[in-house]
Image (cartoon, rainbow, N blue to C red; front, top):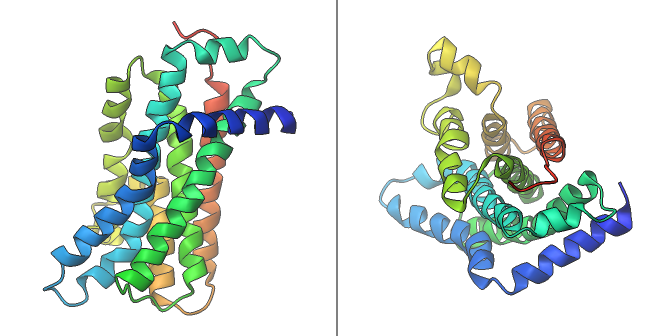
Length: 245
């Protein structure tokens, strides 16, 4: 992996995104809009937003980064840009690393905006540190980026890329513990939830929600989410093809 080539790839992706304001708006503003909407949906239910707001703060960035990254990367494949890049002395790790850096930079901005809005704009009440909450939100966004890069290898069109969301994201959403505690699920479903990264993202958020100190469970959850993101990025590099068709 060559640092200069990786940074050049990241800069190229960011220049392209600069001319796509709709994608930028989707990445940066949609999670904030969804948080505002849910805050006032639960306005009449005392404590409901505080109970699930931290979890949603991690889930929304993951979903939006997955959607935008998968479509943007697939657009590079179908337009032939990816094939031309790989014909140059550019390694697969350089390419995937460049994409990850570019979208990761946007993930940082997205996470900061959403966390700031939730804590100081919408009054989300958490016991733990805002920095710990921000760290999990950022890792969730990076995980969504990694998943988007990975699944784009298996889609032939933007429509197919969107269709991967029910297959990849929705099962994790249902089993992550947002709707019911994972230890109350059927044993088979609990076992499946134990291998899904979103489950640990939600657990990490809930640790910040309930504890003032840095807990062992929080550290475990953060390491698992980060490890899954790097693992998926590695799989994305391994499945990267030099031909788009």
